[in-house]
Every structure is written in structure tokens, then in C-alpha cells.
Image 1: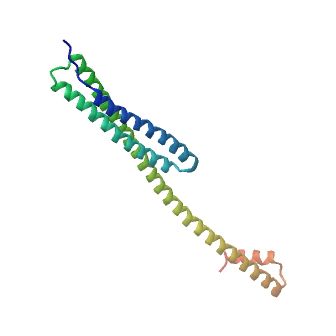
Image 2 (image 1 turned 180 degrees about the vertical axis):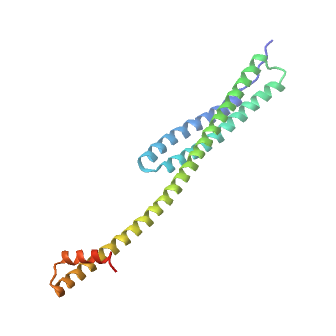
Length: 179
């Protein structure tokens, strides 16, 4: 006489979780394509983190269902060693998948942190460049005003002395070396 365990409840629970995972995968693919077209790298990483978080929750349900089936088989006097081994193998597979998803989430979070740090660094660089550009513009403006004033002074002095502006500039240059 062969007595087996009824795994229909386990299979039904896992089937529903698998269906939800497939739906989540399709929603993620759509959102990912939209983020590529309209979003930033930060948006894409945030989307991936959200997706992986939801997928991990579903995978936890699969692990729990596999654990319940394995525990039921272990406590049952009717389960064969082959059935127990199959359930143990399924439980290990689900746990492995869960660990992979956790690793992917950790990587996505690290990339998000790296992108945030890069954005902060870029923001600091932009502020420094802005300050530099502002200072350069102010210096250039002062130079232009000084040059205009000098040209005006040269023209006025040329009119008063009857000398050309070039002759006056030569005399000013020589005056720098003589007190």
C-alpha cells in the first residue's frame, strides 16, 4: 500500500505567487521602458529597487510555502524519502532565488548611493565653476572698463599735448622705469 501526501494546497499557493511574479515582471518591463524614454538614471534605479523589493516579498511567500510543504512531509509518516528530497530541493531552490534577489537589491541600492554621491560631487563642481565664471566675468568687466577709461585718458591727453596716443603710451611705459 502506497500513501502519498496531498501537495495541492502548496502547489496552489505557489501557482498564485508565480502568477503575481509574472504580472510584476511585465509591469516592471513597461515601467523600465518608460523610464528609459522619459526618466533619468536615478528614476530607473528607484524603479528597479521598488521592483526588487516587491519581488523579494513574493519570493518570501514562495519560501514559506516550500517550507510548510517540507515541514509537513517531514512530520508525516506517509511521505517517502524521494518526496522529502524533492521538497527539500525545491525549498533550497527558492531560498537561493531569494538570496539572488537580495543581492540584486543590494547592488541597485549601492548604485543609487554612488549616483547620489556623483550628483552631489557634480553639484559642488558646478557651484565652483559658477563662482569661477562669475569672478572671471567680473574681472573681464573691470578690465574692459579700465581699458575704456585708459583709452579715454589717452585720447584726452593726446588732445591736450598734441602728441599721438602711441607716443604717450611709449612715454608712460618709460615712466614706469624712471621715478
